[in-house]
Image 1 (cartoon, rainbow, N blue to C red):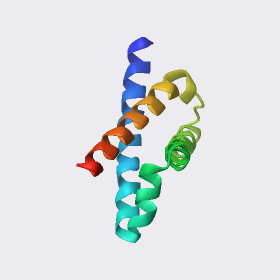
Image 2 (tube, rainbow, N blue to C red):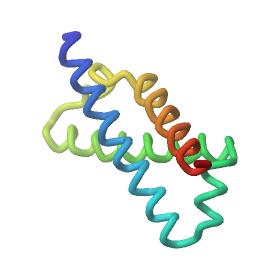
Image 3 (cartoon, one colour):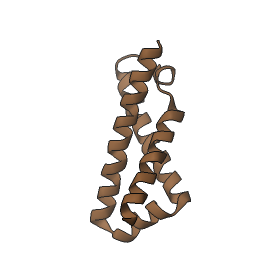
Length: 98
């Protein structure tokens, strides 16, 4: 069970990071000011991270429901997912300053 939880959480983190980066790239192409607001404003950053998590969770839940299962929370540690996404944001912030 521990191995399934770790594997599921790691997969969820990897997908979340990809969605996070994709979203930032979309902002970058549309309007640079919006991107800077998301990167520099802590409230907007947290809101964006939670939106990414909620988006991925809803898609995952829909897929699980289609398969006749409803047990994502048993296998994914959402605290670790949010922690990893916040770390990803800090790296993006540091890289944007360089």
